[in-house]
Length: 452
Ligand SMILES: Cc1cc2nc3c(=O)[nH]c(=O)nc-3n(C[C@H](O)[C@H](O)[C@H](O)COP(=O)(O)OP(=O)(O)OC[C@H]3O[C@@H](n4cnc5c(N)ncnc54)[C@H](O)[C@@H]3O)c2cc1C
Image (cartoon, rainbow, N blue to C red; front, side):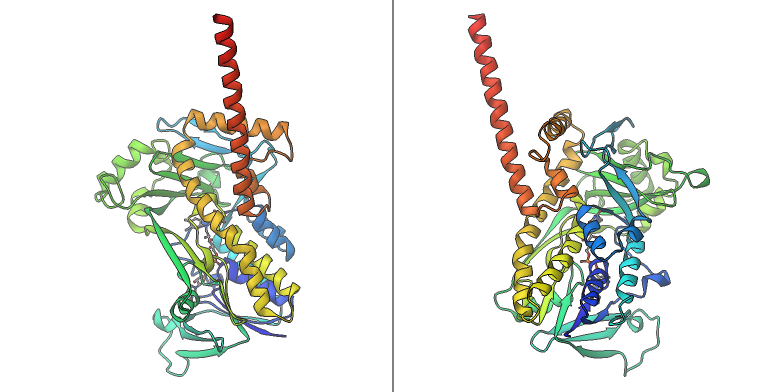
């Protein structure tokens, strides 16, 4: 069987290693960080994530969905909770079916579960503290440095410090700032690459558990504080806490940059999130100490080089987090790549090419949907018109089951490819708006007729 090197054992890297291990491939997985089970975890990334149908399907194929979901908190279909500036709450249902829910899951628990799933296959080996610096595409060779030395954790050892490893193919599962992708960019003259950053950054803050580990707000809900140009969200954790994420402009008169003093922080939160402030005793320390992350969309092509190199997950298509789909999409990549390798067992280049064709337009569609959903979450969820449109969506979904599906339902609760979901939603919208315009025209015509 062929040998694969995977670079990056984040969410998709661990899962892909398990998929490849199950097919009998020889797999070496190299990760620049220390083993997450040693407690050294994931600075600067979101602590919890929304896991939905696509991601769960990918986990089910390996028989590990239940193992993962036992660490999750369901955020019920009817429980998108909107907090207005006066501290009042409104429910905005995701879906007509109250049984449909997304799941809040800790990144560390999920990462550990997928790595352990991979390690159950004796043909998969995981090597932590190895940072890839360069890939030679033609020979499928990766140069790796011992990152525990870089971090000052281990003493320098000139023999171990830089190593080269080779395989039949290398897969870059090394996230948005992928070293594997950078090597492709350097080497391939026709490599297309585009990165764009939002003007907003994000910062994570905490609502700790209440007395005896209770949740201080509704537990089974995604909480949103929409404030037009910015917003805060909160997802529940199993220990009774909530992780809040503030998405706010980097620059401007009211922004991360202009909020310098303790008073600035207090004033901003008291004005905008008055009901959250009493629940956040460590607000000031969190605000000052936690990093401000950036939000990037990365599009590139192709995602493979001959039968030697491929890209999976954020390395191929980082998206902004507002549809809660980046990891779900990365997991879906693993399913599709596994299917392609099974369909073309003797032609890996064809398998990589098919995988790219099947995923690229969907990744592009998701990138657009994710940006649109930022505007919807931060601005429109607070508006009455938006809530009326959602009610109409749900009424139509109930009246036309299987025929009318709201976009959010298709993206989150089905495996309809993202591009098809986006297209179908546009068609549905245009039929509804045409219908509504016609009905309004008829009503106006009738009124004029009867009044005249
Ligand atoms: C604030 C925020 C909230 C999010 N919320 C959600 C959500 O609710 N739902 C959802 O589905 N998605 C969400 N996402 C997106 C999700 O985090 C990513 O899509 C997902 O982590 C991608 O998985 P990945 O394995 O491709 O990359 P990563 O998880 O980034 O893993 C990459 C791994 O590669 C390693 N690595 C990097 N460079 C090297 C190197 N040179 N050598 C060796 N190893 C390397 C890294 O250490 C890391 O372990 C969110 C993202 C953000 C920023």
